[in-house]
Structures are given as structure tokens and as C-alpha cells.
Image 1: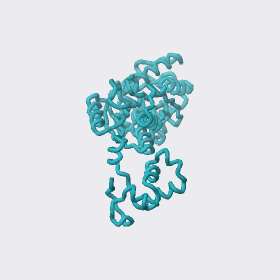
Image 2: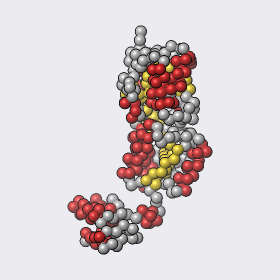
Image 3: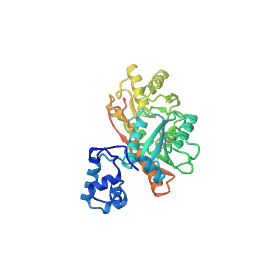
Image 4: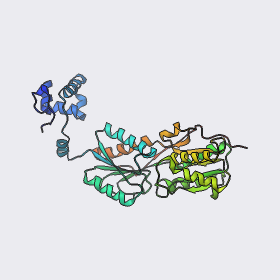
Length: 346
């Protein structure tokens, strides 16, 4: 099928695959194999491959996506439905998705669910109508299978045709609580995640179990439930104020995520409490802002970028090779110690 781009090299005619083949004096099949990175291209000498690619660039040849779609009956399009796009968690995951999708020749379309089941259903239908071959869900409690292969990042429910990529929350809780206890902290406040967040209950259960194993008593008066859907540091600010106003003494805070930790630190500062001299703070996720906030935030790092890459890898292997997807892939956390934690005051 002819292309819409034209150059002087072809006397103003549309540049086709045959045009490139004629320019280099090779068969269209050979040129197609190289430009489409077909498995057979590895048998073509490197110098020949480079000559074909150089000619395609010189002639400004661009593959006709619509022709490829019709011929292969594929769209090479993935759908992504995330809680938010602008927050550090989702943006890090999406960066990993983009990196992997681009390298594999896929395009993706993004929607935002805000933990709203109706909004999720709307976007999933729209993505399917627009030809998404697979869907990646971020931080949502998926209640059923979809019509296409899917990967749920922070997914915890079993659904046919869906792979869940989950963090080892027990190990994460151990890293955070052991770090604080080794610094002498016993009165540790907790910011629990929003009830609709897919990881919230699993992370809280892990914190409770690990605390019991370590002999750490969690004071109910120091446990605050996040109910806001904010995706900026303002999320943690009112809950940090609430902890101070309860007048239950504490020397450390374990926050559900980094943005709530940063917001809480602002509230502590306004109440004349210094971090970490008076209150140590541990976040969760290791978003880019965690390293640049002052004081820099000690946090439990999730491999968010890698989780996004894994999601694409799983879908592409299923779509192109027919490989059965694992039901669950567990990823490991690590503790990143920065300036926001210090030994508890005697």
C-alpha cells in the first residue's frame, strides 16, 4: 500500500517498501524483514541491514500502520487504567510501561479510574472498542475477568486471564518496622491506606502480623485511616495534624506511601516537631520526590518502574507467543535509609 510521505529522491511519488528496495537494489522481502525486525533479519549481513536502514531514513520511509493492522489483524495497542497519572506511584509505573512498550513496538492508551468501579468499567469498554489487545490495571480491585489478557499491578484477586503483580508486603513491613525498632522506636504511629486502594488491607495486615512477631504493641490511638483521594503531599497533612492533636506521644511514623509521609512531615513542622530529631518518618514507594524533599525521606522502595516493564513483557509474550501467563508475580521491596529517621530520643 502506498505511503503519504514523498521525497525528491522518488520524484514526489509516495515512498513505498518497493521504493526502498529499488533504491538499495534488494528484494522487497529482504527490506521488509530488516525494517520490521523479523527473525529472519538476523541472517542478513550487518552491512546490508545498515544500508537498508540508512536508505529508509534518507527516503523518509514510514511503515503504513493501518496496512499492517489490516494485514496482521493486530493493533499493537495496550490499554492502561491507573488510579492517577500525576502521582509519583502511577507515573513511575507508567514510565516503565512506556519504556517496555516502545521497545517492543507497542502503543498504549491511558485512562484514570479514581478507584471508581463505574469509571473503570467505562474505560475498559472504551479501550476494548478502540482495539486494545491487552489491558494493564494499576491499583484497582478487579472483580472479574476482561475480554483480553490483562495484568493487574497491585492486584490481589484471582481472575481468569489476569496476572497479578504484587509486592511482598510482609517483607516490606519487616524492613520498615525493624529499621525503626533498631533505632529504639517503640511508640510508632501508622497512616493506613485508603480502603479502596488495592494494597491497603494487605499492607495493614502485614504490619499487624510483623509487629506481633517483633513484640511491638501498636497503640490504636496512633493509627489513622486515610480517607482522602488526594494524590499530592496534601494527602498526609490533615492526618499528621490529627496525630498531633490526639496528644498520644509517639516518636516515629510509618506512612502508607511517600506523599502522605511528606504531607505529615509538614504538619509536624508546623507543630514545632523536628524530623527526625523529634519524630522519625518512614514512607513507602520511593517516588522521585522522596530523595529531594528536606529532610530526604527514608522509605520502603517498590520497584515501580520494573513492575510497569514486567506488565508489558507478560502481555506481549501472551499476545505474540501464546505463552500462558502466571497467575501471580511477587516483587521484592528494599529499605532506602535517608535523613528522615534517627535514633529515638531517650
